[in-house]
Image (cartoon, rainbow, N blue to C red; front, top):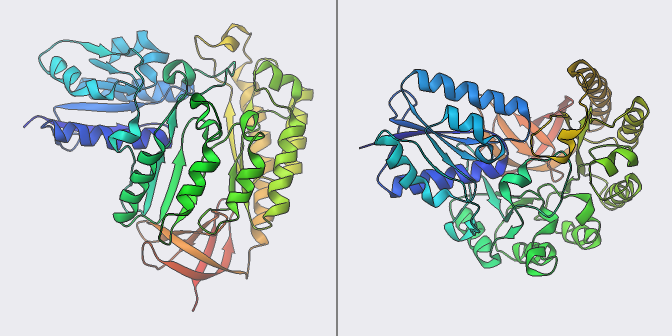
Length: 423
């Protein structure tokens, strides 16, 4: 029996795609095997930043030297087609997953093949969700594609326009995942807030209300929402987050603290609007968790702009800060602008990281000695990972996967807490 090895890069959406790919291949008669024993390797790729692209190409090149046939799926074949065609034997776009068995058979016969035409596909109808090993977490996509035109983003070139998945099928997928013992549902997409807009209206609040009605003791974590669209439904989202099933968690990417840079990025919101949403969220939920993203070294970012970003970060004190060094991607509007030297981007990243670490360290100390109800979501080698109602991570020395337990916080690190189960 022909065997395959599957490896995933990038976002949670790709993890869900990987599970779907695994099931499709097994259903078509292929057998999953170790990297060494596999006849071919499927790499689920990501093309958000150049660094990840280099990592994927290096990995594929190493595998080819070992005699493996390589299939690229995901965004990279559409973002960087030339280098992908040189490196891989087969290329599959994000919406061409169903063509995978056909492409693989052509490759195994000694040829090269690809399927990259963007085809509308509702992956929810294919039961697209992922439950990683040693967890009680299910990653459930609700849409693919986006409606934004960010000047730096190449993902939209690969994913295409928004395609909201069928609400009934999403709810069905969640129920199936729960029947497998899942206790945490992570909703994911390129932009959670725009769910339904391709059908004429914002449908995310409606979907979340339906999820809250599903029976069972479980938790839901909302994925990233672009402030451009989130601001139009934010009141409804805050109301829904009152429900016990939802983590008091908000992932709202700022990208820059300068309105001038945001305009150059085509983000279509202002810093003041972002700050107002954060303020509303924190006023409503005292024990909450804010995650945001920053791009440093965007071509139009001056020192003054960067200092504005620092000022906003100090003002909002996020528990999670994703810092990305601007990465020039061909085909994007920003690619025409003069790029900064890497040393400047690295220095700004280092400065911002140091500031955030100080913020996170001080905020973490406030948890010491406090008691919380947590959900144990992941079993690691010698420890367990649990989540507070805010989604804050707690490391435990003991526990049972999927159980809700009361813990006392006995230690604090910038990225996580240390806890002890109490009666």
